[in-house]
Amino acid sequence: MKNSKKFVIFLVLISLFVFSASFANAEETSEKKFKLGDYIKTADFKVEKHIPVLSMPAKVKAGELFEIKADIGKVIPHPNTPDHFISWIQFFYKPADGKFLVDLGKCYFASHSESLKPEVPGIASTEPFCSMKVKLAKSGTIFAVSYCKGHGLWETSQEIIVE
Ligand SMILES: [Fe+2]
Picture 1 (cartoon, protein in one colour):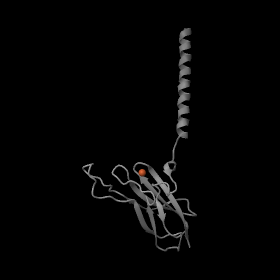
Picture 2 (picture 1 turned 90 degrees about the vertical axis):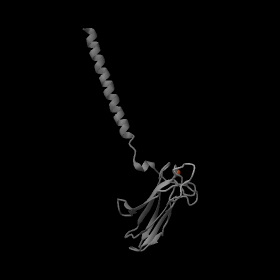
Picture 3 (picture 1 turned 90 degrees about the horizontal axis):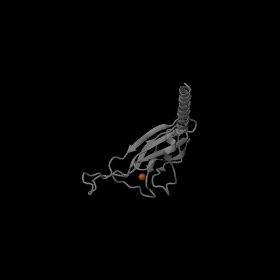
Picture 4 (picture 1 turned 60 degrees about the horizontal axis):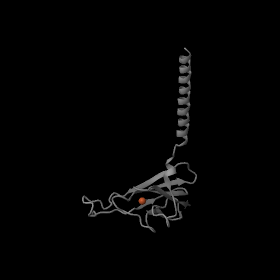
C-alpha cells in the first residue's frame, strides 16, 4: 500500500514536471518568433553587392511622371549564374503621413544562363536592373527590395519630396 502511494506521488510529480516543462517551452517558442524584417538586410552598396542602388529625383511635382531605377552590382558585380542570381527587385512607396506601404511593382529576372548541359553556358541571361515610371501626390520614401537566391532579402530606400 505504501509503495502504491509513493508511486502515485511519483506520477503526480512527473506530470507536474512535464506540464511545467512544456509550458516553459511554449513561452520560449513565443519569444523566438521572428519577423520578416529580421531577415531583410541593408548595407552600403559600395561594399555590399546585393544592395539595390536607387536612381531617382530627390524632388518632383505632385502628379509629375518620373522614373525610378534600381541596379544591383553597380559597384561590386553580383554573380548571375544558374546557382546564384538575383530573382527580383520590388519597389514600395510609403507616404510620409501614411501608415502603410504601397506596392509600386516588381521586376523578375528569369534567365541566368541555364543550360541542359551544365558544362555549356545557356544562351540568355537577365541582369538585375529594374525601372518604372511613377506619379506621386505626397512626399514619402521609396524602398527597393531585392532577393538573391543564395543570400536572401536586401533593401535600400530614399526619401522623395513632392511639391
Ligand atoms: Fe548573392
